[in-house]
Length: 267
Image (cartoon, rainbow, N blue to C red; front, side, top):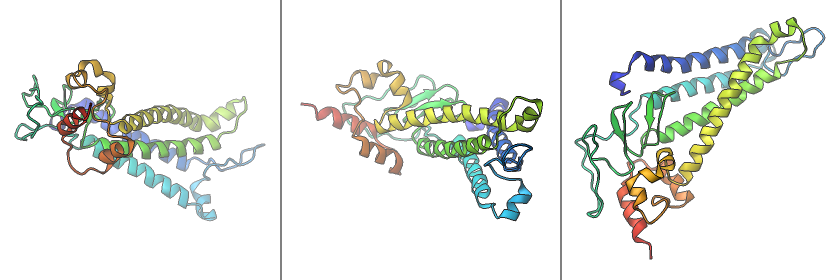
């Protein structure tokens, strides 16, 4: 939903991320994964807080905490920022032979590659998808920061998974389950989240390198400017330029100009 009309469901979703991240981080930090247990060698994870100070091993946990805080801040930044809402007062300068459609919901003229999101109740520039975990769309303004967020989150998950796994020792007994239940549950949760984030990040980077969006990739046959183009992807300018435009451009791109230019180059 839009930022001004966020319901209680959106607040719960946005509260879940920092709560879960903080709980897992504190659990891994406070759990004595480096302590030896009867009949077993000490784990390779972090020792308890007291022994960390004795052995001077606070640097790695501190970096881990900072990464967790960074991921939480990035989450709120991407979730709360304008993803590229099309405003009625904005003038769109386009070539004369390109016709823009008027949105049937908010009645604004949609720039090329924009789409109306019924959950956000706005048209979004270079619409990629609506992310239920963010309770916000991913569009032209927040898409680069979304990739940064996924990258930081993946580093945190891989690091946390390594710590949880290194602290586990395996044997069939209730004592084993009692001592390792938190680390085991943490590792399974982290493993699931890692797979999801990794697949999402890889797929996003592939689409960005081709200068296409999730919406365009999934609905190519339904989008008029793609159906009528003589090119399969009229926005593809090569991997380097695609990445440069995505990550380094500080201004909104006039996709209509690129569309006309690429199609006019055909012989």
